[in-house]
Image (cartoon, rainbow, N blue to C red; front, side, top):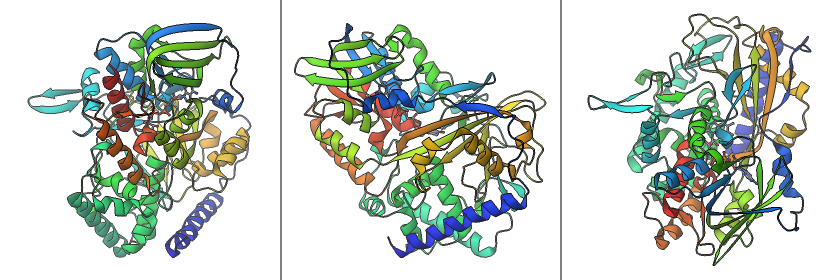
Length: 548
Ligand SMILES: Cc1cc2nc3c(=O)[nH]c(=O)nc-3n(C[C@H](O)[C@H](O)[C@H](O)COP(=O)(O)OP(=O)(O)OC[C@H]3O[C@@H](n4cnc5c(N)ncnc54)[C@H](O)[C@@H]3O)c2cc1C
């Protein structure tokens, strides 16, 4: 570990201790929370863990024949299914482990109020994400009016979008500006210049397959973002908190874990970084719904009807010269199903795919071996009544507490046009990658302990939270998404080169079809190195288009 990493670990511990002290000072120790009901929801760990047991060797209870099987039912799988449908291919089945499709982009309900199980927004896609733009046009979310693109006002995130609780006040925007000195502002400007320079030097694209993969990007990919900040002399605590927050929010891991390429990509691939003096803090264009990106998944899944087979654990995929055989357990009936097909789209997380495919291609083995995944905790807090507020900026869509272990909360009712605030659900997010024993703690900590911790944390800004919370549902994602650690871009680039050499796809984006498994196309955000809707959708779309 380099000196920079040691410095930063201390910095993070100090900020967590400061947060703890702030909670204690605010008199927010949890008490009288027994009235809050709830439990764990949203993700079926037992089904996923079924793969840890030996897979049944008995003959299947039922055999189906289709032209194409799609294994998995996240955004990548749904995009693949849409591409098949658009090409006129209807003879396929999509096998999903959970009871609804969408994966990390599903919605759920708490007390009759819709809220996200994971992904809660989609930034307005740029021109590199053409397939996503087309989807938005198809769903009526984007249309050209008098030569300009307009987005549906109901989904476009209303103002106020974001606020930060710092030093006992709420400020507009998430970059700390309240009470910071000239030295901090100067570091903000230097970081803005560095992002602008990075954008001039190379193309940071979403989807990543459209990046330039320039030498300067590989140099950034070789070190952590934290080390890069050290080398740039960007040491300001407020700037570092903000950058760490952004990385944890998008990548599930902080500046000490993600590569400098990923840290810069966060800004350079979208709107850059605006220091306050340059007009920073403006609302970003993004689409959101009470159920988050579950709104999009539901619309992608709706046309599938009987072709969507939910509650199926895919446990074995065999591929050969004559076709593909996919075995899945029907959770409701306990029956073992065999799906025989000419080809399959494997839209499973890479580490699951490597486990279930007989003779997995070497590239898949390598990707699964190098993959580090982020554990996430979400808490759905059902509120009986609106919260009292501390001074400062008004309640926003995204509400973050400076220095807290969690990433704050979004309000499911934010897009509501109702004139007065009422009962709602707040979705609290916490990425546990940087925390010692994070994944074990996620899965082993009792619900009531998480309840107390979360109420205490948010209580610094909302002393009445415990009293007004009726219910808290916790969603645990053990292996939610790929972390873009150093070396990720190098790996993606290697894959891209080997794929392009094969020239197997006529679609706009290269498709993952390996020589060793020509009847399998792969699609999942793990193959992009980090997980956002545009990456998953583009890969799925390309796989569906290539196999149509
Ligand atoms: C907490 C959280 C917040 C996020 N927020 C955002 C956001 O706001 N915006 C954004 O763009 N992205 C966000 N993301 C990223 C999100 O992961 C992507 O947007 C996208 O949903 C990834 O889709 P995917 O298809 O690649 O993967 P997944 O969602 O992982 O889909 C894989 C699917 O395979 C299924 N599966 C797994 N094993 C089996 C098996 N054995 N048999 C059958 N099926 C199986 C899973 O149930 C799942 O449905 C967030 C992710 C998390 C975890």
